[in-house]
Image (cartoon, rainbow, N blue to C red; front, top):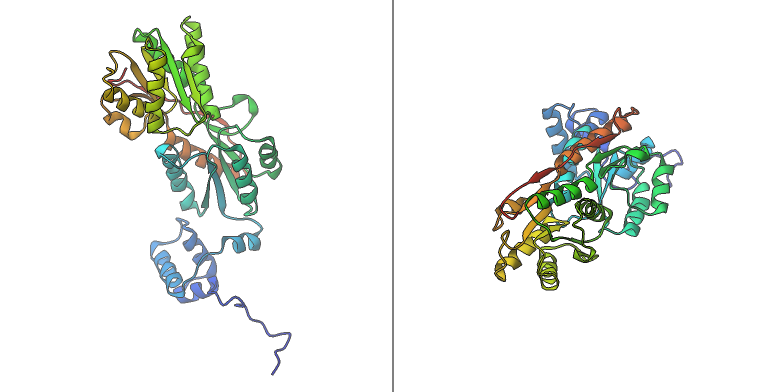
Length: 343
């Protein structure tokens, strides 16, 4: 027997549907959808019923189909340059804690400090019709910049500030952080100050610019005491660059490192080679990673509000996605100098 044109088979794929999950759980399809998306307004007992039904049926949410049906997805794209340490993990955790209870899926992209890779990630994620974007800093290709602008998708920038651009951003002044580092070391009586940076993303360069500016103001700047490399930042690289600086310029009595992992490596090599910190050379890091307070000696560092930045940026994005404007589009959350034994 041949089938009629009017025969309908809603399950041509053979996969379980949301309607089946709802029927098994004894709720409406919209309640089942909200429960599976983690929206906090759904009663706990209903969430448990829906999740149990979904598990029994082996139901998997299809975000692409949901976006197609509504012409709008429930996803937010977050792009960060690294997942290799806690620096951005804390930010991502805070973002997730804000967005997930509101029913949003967080799509995370790691572009490994590559502008081209970030552009490719943006282009690929745009196919998901995201509701919002959370981007790190302002250093990206012109094509990526135009893509974001043309999309009209609500966007909040994290980690850095650009008050003159008219953009929604949450972060702190990298330049001011560099200036604070220099002033602290100068206040400790140091006169031969060096800056060591790796990765050379825009934020690392801005810290160096602030450090340089403060030294120039104090007539203490020596361009030979800047050691910069595009190599990925790591503890091992920090130790290597520290020994390189001390061999070439033994008169150096203070070093500001662009990242804590570099500074931690320096402390380990100093201990290994009998270089006394801070008596011979003071060491100052940046970001105040958890291990820094437990180094020997304990590492002085500039603490950055990574969790607070993620939380506030996500909250601002929720406001923008609701069609509202931000009263204060530029939010400076500042930073804190943590003075410990190494300086």
